Amino acid sequence: MKIRLTVNGLAYERDCAEHKTLLRFLREDLGLIGTKEGCGMGECGACTVILNGRAVNSCMVLAVEADGAAIATIEGEASGPSLSDIQKAFQRNHAVQCGFCTAGMVMSVKELLSTTPGPSVDQVKDAIEGNFCRCTGYTQIIEAVMELTGHPETKGELEHV
Amino acid sequence: MVYEFRYLAPKTAAELAATLDDVKSDGKLLAGGTDLIPNIRNGMLKPRVVVDIKKYEGAGRLAFGSDGLTMGPAVTINDLLRSKDARERYPVLCSCAHELASHQIRNRATVAGNVVNASPCSDMAPALLCLGARAVLRSATGERVVPFSQFFAGVKKTVLAQGEFLSMIVVPAESAGTSGNYLKLKRIAGHDLGIVGVLMTRQDGRIRFGVSSAAPTPVLVDTVSEKDDPDEAARKVLAAVLPISDVRGTKEYREHMIGVYARRLFTEVK
Ligand code: FES
Ligand code: FES
Image 1 (cartoon, helix red, strand yellow):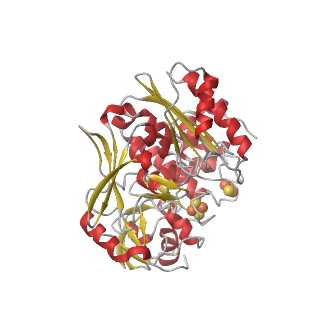
Image 2 (spheres, chains in turn purple, cyan):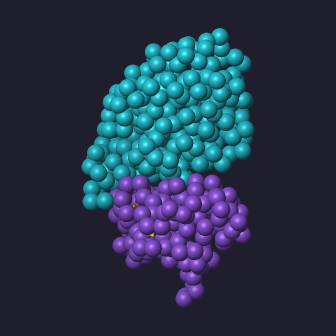
Image 3 (tube, helix red, strand yellow):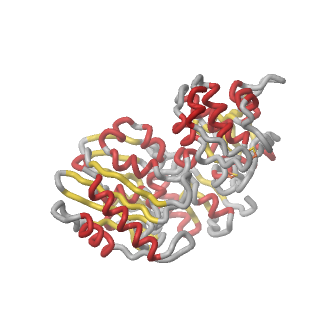
């Protein structure tokens, strides 16, 4: 089926197999391999992208369902060599270790900040509840968001493990 | 996915009904996809045709009118949670919705899909049962209305006939303002399927319990009265359910926790 969609502001028109997930379409058909496949079953959040303003697991969306949609992926964050604000905050706060969860994590945070510019620690936890990170213990990720949004004082609420 | 199927996206409700009539048992309806797509991927389901229910005019409508709250089949869990009117008028619906899976899944998963799947651990079913909600079922030959108390037929089974789809959920206006709380026991603090879920609602002295993950279908308990004490209330709830042992918990553990939750809710929900 022919689909048209925009990804990170660029318009694409492609013939796409009807059974292909959006995740596979992004990675295989568009070559955007920043978005990762962890479980492929909606458990881990590594494949999170923003679909019409909402963070979704792209492994559970068919590409054909996204016909006409606007999508944002991790590739849309940095411009040239300069990282986005969220990415810089992750970097400053050591919120990245192996990096496998990061693309999805950043997308979940991006959706949160688009609707809630000054989130509480609990709101951040809620937003990234579907993103598994096996390295950082989450604390640095939450700290990155709190520092970015100007609530670094909430650091005390967080425990380093 | 390696498994191949065809994808159809009817543009009107009538076209959808005709399509379902046409594809018969070869077809599977796709709403949020958060169950269907993993199930196709892991080989549990092999539909020849996947029919998208979200793309017809009005499928995503969430509205408040004289008959209450109506939701089309494409209304997501987060659409409901983001509606200020829903949070104010039907807080019980929202406390169950918030317990469902993770944020990303709530952005895709639909209220209708959560009940049509008829999983014993549906989080929305307890709320819809306690609030006296109804399902409007549509097919090529017409429409019928079924209260949710008669909607579930067994594990993963509903009264939906072949060719029928859930075109609207109606939560009656009379149940607006019902107070309540939903306690869900999970293995982890984050998103997970429930081991048990207990909802208690109270409106004008009328008490109801909705229990998930405790029987082949979600259960409505209508027998508890204000005059009962917490132990009596818990006994009545337990008499109505029939938990099983499975990977997530044993029968005994489930019974124990349903009792704990029922007693706690009975004293807490005002
Ligand atoms: S790859 Fe999509 S949730 Fe894990
Ligand atoms: S940094 Fe390794 S999984 Fe999160």
